Length: 419
Length: 84
Image 1 (cartoon, helix red, strand yellow):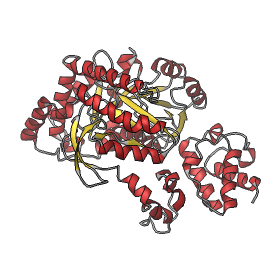
Image 2 (cartoon, helix red, strand yellow):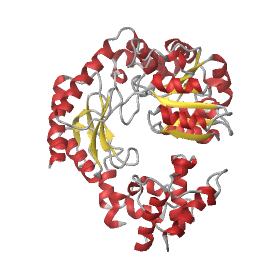
Image 3 (cartoon, rainbow over the protein chains, first blue to last red):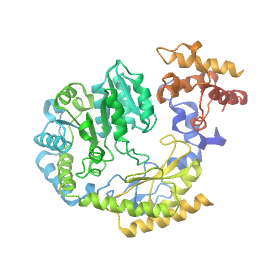
Image 4 (cartoon, rainbow over the protein chains, first blue to last red):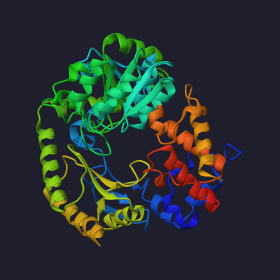
């Protein structure tokens, strides 16, 4: 394996043959200690030394230096994580309620601000009720695990997030994946589900590609088969639609979707997740969604900040307008460099560089040395022939920052791919 | 080892991973997807088959495989090399 360490990835060590559970697979150790893998792994989990603003500071793993960087990796799409009003609201909630909720929601963890925020979110998403989760991943896992049982069918777009898959695994339902955004493939899967309870899951914006769900076509097939529907709007809430309600609103079809899920860690700038649906199923989920009823309720200062974030993002369209202006500017600059941006239609813009893991890592280091924090996305997170960088556009980007980033991307990636 | 023997190992593991498929009915010219396997099932079948064949093929080399026969050809290449 030593001569081809970069051909292997975390996908190759999932099953552990070691007789001792507390020992990783025998070849995993030699792989992870290989200098090339050590070098590649060094890019991940680097420390940020300041808030995830457009300009931040990282502790670069490769030379141990503090480095001022333009940050194009954080999910702080609307800049709400560091918005002064949001920070002030979080501080006020901290003063009133303390740091933690100190209990599960059913016992002592439900505070008045949790109830108020859940009501605001349900109203915002135009659903009857809402459940708040301390974790975005936990929200998807908890909703799916609470809704489905053994004998049910769970049909997902093949590019759905791991949290949906984990929820499906935990539920015991049989999972079928349809080809990405392909209504014909969905139809073929739903044919196999006849006579069973079935839930179809898709995302508003797909996180690795930045493309949108083909909602009208997908919903038409679901309606034909009378399948229940679930949309994950993690990367679209507060950004898409005339009122920021998401891709459902963008297509004018939000009322045709059974469950609407969102996270607080992206555009909201905090952490957690929420699930909106009809009041009866939300009441049912409270009994059966383990990440909700067996986990401490969301931290009060985070909820206080999130409530303000919702208010700031929805009182007018200024943040959304600025985001789309930045997306248009950056995208045009990248297109002028003749880079492969896939089918991105959102603030998530991939730069697909192809199959070379070595180039990906080499570019990633060089970009950071030049002052741009733009993380690589490697196989198995994306297909082996389309390794990439993934830009998260933010309202906080200035024209100067985008021009500087484009220059770095041109010098390192565009020229590097031509070399 | 022959390609047919490798195919038998894969077919056995597909059947073992499914409630309603009989190994004898599996056509190697089809993909696991045709038999209702999702990506998680495929990882399970590929891993158990590689374990049985005592080989280790990087997943990155399996992305262009279209059917069971092609998977067997790739596995056989590693069996004949005496591992990966």
